[in-house]
Length: 390
Image 1: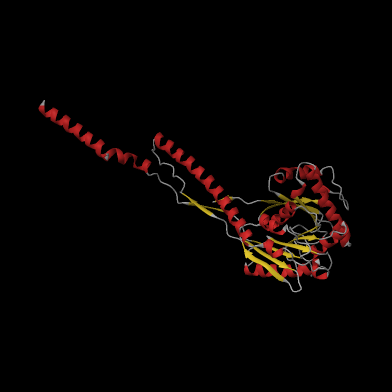
Image 2 (image 1 turned 60 degrees about the vertical axis):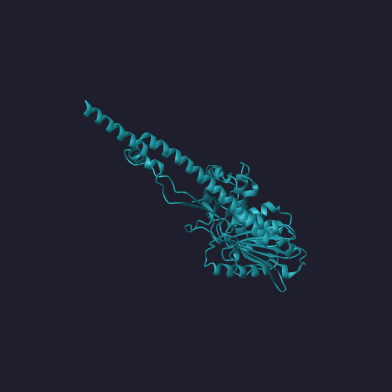
C-alpha cells in the first residue's frame, strides 16, 4: 500500500510540475502562439512614367493653369511648361514623386495536416485581420501618394509664374510654332526616359490661333490637345485636327476657350493613363458604305461597351476610320462623323458625354493592326484609372 501511495504522489507531483512549468502544454501550443507567416508585403500604387508638355501663350493660358496641373498630376510624371517666345522660356521642368509605399506583415500560413479545429479557427481569424491590414495599407498608399503629388504641384509655384505673362499673339503663338516647341521638349524627355513613357505622352497647347502646318512626323505618338483663344468654326477645328494627325499625333483635340476646366483635365488625364482596353469594331457592321448612319444591327455590337464605359473615372476614346477613296478631306469628314455617331449612341444610353473623346483619323494613321481593306472601322479605347496594390 505504501508503495502504491508513493507512486501515486510521484505521478501527481510530476503532473503538477508539468503544468506549472508548462513543459508539455506550452510545447503543444507554441505554433499557435507564434504562427507562421509569409514574407512582408510591400504595397504601392502601380503608375507607369508619363510626360506632359504644356506650351502657353500669356494671352490664352489664364489663371486655370495651376489647377489643371494639380488635377492631372500623377506619380512619375515629367512636366515641362514652356512660354512661347520670342525667345521661348521654360517656366517649369520637374518630375513628380514616385508612388508612396506601405509594408504590412506577411500573410498567415495555414496550419499543416493534423491541425486541430481550434488552430484552423485561429488561422481564419488571423487571415481576416490580415485582409483588413491590406485594405488599410492600400488606402494609406493612395492617400499619401495623392498628398505627395498635390504638395509637389503646389511647390512648383505655377500661379506666380504664369500670372501677368504678356500675350505674344500673332504667328509666335500659332499652333504650328507651339507644336515645334512642344515636340522638341517631348523628344528630349523621351530620350532621357529611354522610351519608358510609351504612349503616355500628352502635349497641351494654349495657342493664339490655329495657323500653320506642323512638320511631318513631328508629333510621333503624342496625344495633342489645343486650346485656342478663338475657335472660328467647326470646319477650321476639323482642319487643324487633321493637320495634327498627319504630323503623327496619336490623338488630336481642338477646344475653344470656353472648355470647362474639369473636361480639359479629364482629356489630359486620359492621355497619361496606362490602363487601356481597345475594342475594334468592324465598319461594315456599323455603317453602310460611305455612310455615317448606324445600321440596325449596330446596337448589338455597341451595347457591350456600355457597362465598362459607365464606370466612374473611365474615359472612352472613339477613333473613327474610313476607306481611302482618293479625297483625304472627305475621308477625314466621314471618319469623324462615324466616331460622332458611335459616341451619340453611347451618350443616349447613359455614358456621360464628358467621359468620351471623339477623334477622326480618315484613312491614315491606323492605331491598331488590321487586315488590308479594314480601314473602315471604329476603335474604342477604354482608359481606366489605376489603383494601389501589392
